Image (cartoon, rainbow over the protein chains, first blue to last red):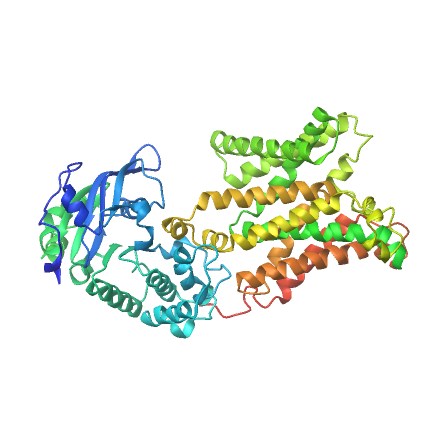
Length: 272
Length: 306
């Protein structure tokens, strides 16, 4: 499962150094170069190079405040970047919007919004439909199919505020499925969800990977990294390490990312 | 009541209805974006802009008024930003400080300038002059198909109708963008939807509605119609399209019922004079919101939430 990644075995990345050459960036599902984002005086993400392979599940990992979500949002153009370029399968971001699906953090929206589960999933079609494209019968069937994949078909007509946190997260995933993308970017998809939902989400993401899509998720649970992911990118404002889990998810890399926040025994347990 | 109704009541009611709809349409999205105060701010800030435009041009025609209101809105945006940064207060408070100050300045300007020749004074600024927008040359329902009588239609009527039609068309055309940019801004941006332009366009639409309605119905009604019909409509349904339809229905109901109550309510209670129609329409809107809070099927607590 982790042997399929297209990335060479990079261990520790030198901050600011060009980790991936141009040929590699063209082969990657998502490649960012020299990405810097700042909310105030201090940068939240500084000069990050990162590439994520297709047909793989990648985790973006780092301590709280490391800029993981910021990196993801800046790579999508959701927040402005001070510098840096983003390529999706070798194409600049702006020409690749319909190849990307995005699952924002659940807490980023107001779930009291007047919409049903079905309405939210159909927002995944808006890019293709534009302002005037008609929703076809096939689209309606696809809406139900996407909900079915996340086990939410019975909830299609519920108001979204009546769902539990896990159910809301599944609806967001169904909306991303409706986007029919090659690259799936998820911001903390397992935050605050129940065990059954975590199971359901990971199954869907594995299905996407096995179809050859790229999945990139901001992830905070170090204990599940080895189970869930093929590829990791460790960061703390700057890039720290990237590569297949077996090589990049090491005690040394974790120590570099988390500093003293992880104890020695904890580190040894995680990195095996 | 045929002829008299057409001459004295039909046009004020229509203008009130159109003004209420024009404000309620953008109000739906402003409320869902937690920007209801923006509509409030705009309708206040309009006043000094209109007064200055009048002082500069000496007339109350539409274009100078719109430009003046637009310029005042720009000044307000800059001031709100400045107060927020320099005064270190939260955005709502900054907005509140700026728009009340500008409105008060507008009132002072009005008091000190000679506007006796035109319909521009403090009372009009608050309550408008809905009752005075009568159709002089109307002789009965037949006047509706008599081009000669159309000349004396109050100019506010076609103006308000145009604004209302344009806002309705914009809402329909940009429906998907408005909906997704309101619900999930990040997702909309990732999709490549011009979220910022949608937000500015919405505020711009609200400003146009406020300026057009201000002249006829005054700032109290503008504020009320931005908020009351959409807020009541939200309590009636959990679908956005249905909510907008309810908000238009409530806007019409407030305008018609409010106008009738203002004219006849005091008589029924044994009083003499009618009360301000715009004021009564605003009160009616508030009462409808109150009823929706109590009885609306989609109100908080009406369905079990986990």
